[in-house]
Image 1 (tube, one colour):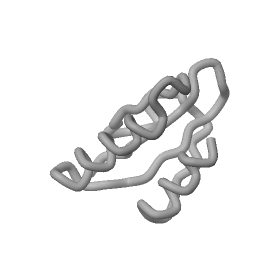
Image 2: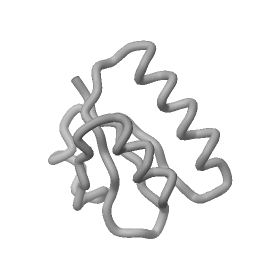
Image 3: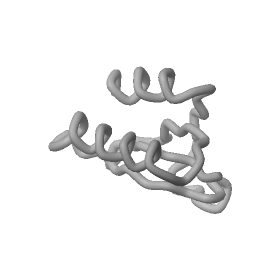
Image 4: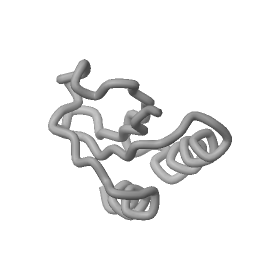
Length: 74
């Protein structure tokens, strides 16, 4: 398991969702890259968000749908 995390450069906090590694995660990363292109977003996968305090606080979404809605509203 890992967390897919998106934040905007220079802003405090990130949006995250817990996911399994694999094709679904890759597809979602590519989609987020396309919709956030040129908007100063950073997209990463983290195995342990607590180890990366520079992206905190994390808003952990309950599912992919909520995650995508939150990212689109950034």
